[in-house]
Length: 479
Image 1 (cartoon, rainbow, N blue to C red):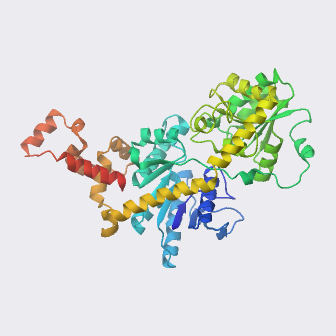
Image 2 (cartoon, rainbow, N blue to C red):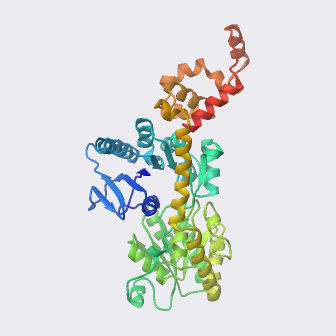
């Protein structure tokens, strides 16, 4: 099978967890005997086209006018993705599946689905609604519209947890049979310290010999709960005054976090390490006594898996996908999200009971190998690909050489619950509004007031057959 992956980031260009997810999945698919091409953004110092661990990586230079903002830059990248695929098609390449990751690849994913006539699979790693606890401005609504559009165009939608499936279905009204849950994975070997390094000397860069290290790694943004972690520091120090909090990562909240630590009088016990490379990250894991993932919103929590793979007992917030990965007092500990006292109590549970911490480490390491190995995740992904291809080839679209006509698609989109408002927000439905008004009876009785019903009767209107309506909607949601 030849898979075309679309991803905004890919190592060495890594901003969040998406890039590492795509790299690990792609390499695991190659390990199972499949060919993978990844289209991604440019990375300073990296080749524009290379094969890394068997994966064909195409990094796209962002030549031309710079985007006025992030969303416009992403659109520019999507155009470059289309240009790159045209070049591959000219060279004789064909693809079985197009796999897009998040709204960052929505434009290219939709265009390639219809242009190449190949089914599109989408992975939703997080939602704009979830990250911001709602949609509060036009930019957030626009991104959410793109996410909805991607889930609509995809044949199947992959998410990482039961929590995320519920979120996707709630926000985008995606049919239950269209969503597949496949957890994130982790390469335990990536977190094994193979080089001989002076652990004591390295550790002294961050903490004194007698200090126990509580370690956080991730972006410094509100949704990651780092402000809660800072509030936890004095509570832990009240019981263990020889504790050091090492915070690795960068983000817009850094200045506020430093200021809060200063106001609490605990600056001397908090070390802001900034961005760390993979080697430094792993060495810090090797030195840490506790790893903390205090997120307020977390679709899965791959950082928790990384800590488990590295052999560090974890404390996570009891929220989102973290609640599914970590079972309290079995492979980790869970704290109330946003609650500094609860987070402190769980950190202290490890510091007060080293034998318990060792038990948790052993349990967690076993589960990482048995449940979250990337070869297992890749096999589950291949099963989704196989189902999609079987359904596609058995359906009418493969035979006629096109997906449903524009009229059918637009009619289905505009009669789905809530989509009229979405298109009004983005402005993309204005050209279709008149036709929608003429045929809005297809949306159901909630649009048929007394006046419209009488008008329909005068015009000799006949209610469409319910079976036909359901068939149209089902066909649209599968396209």
